[in-house]
Length: 196
Image (cartoon, rainbow, N blue to C red; front, side, top):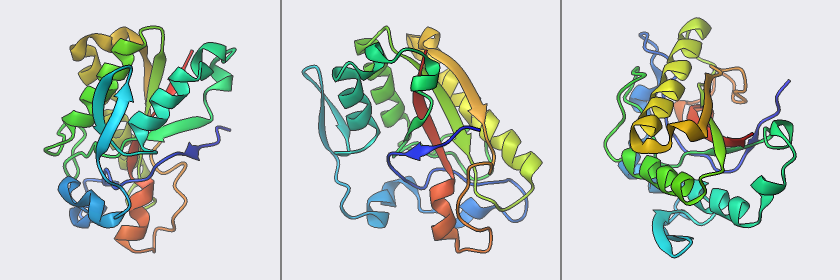
């Protein structure tokens, strides 16, 4: 069974499009900093190009890994599959698998820049939900969202670097379904990992 290591956490998605849609009260993308006041956008260096991101966030951690030759030195996919990087600013509209919230494309553009700077790098996309709602719907929407990002990256010219997209529903959710929406928010996310 696949273990998941989280590198950052942010509210990004809802778990279902039924009447118990949990993202209806999720923090909008423009107020994410209010959830974690220590996160401040700053310039993350991509070989002389400044990307807006968080120190310790997706861009920073992925670039650090690539610069360390961690990807190049990984023998195979099994050596890479334990470390997932959560998107900080990629949010889908409540109950939608194919509509991003305003402001979400910026971080996806950063991922495109990283992939173009490291053309040998390959990635996989993962979608996750919390434990509320119907699991069949959770699986469906998480898969739709992962595929949406994969297709979006393909349209930006880096599709050959995206080896797969998978929706996991609530399989890796850690917070109980009875917890508050803000507590469950950490389980609703989109993530990316390196792959071979």
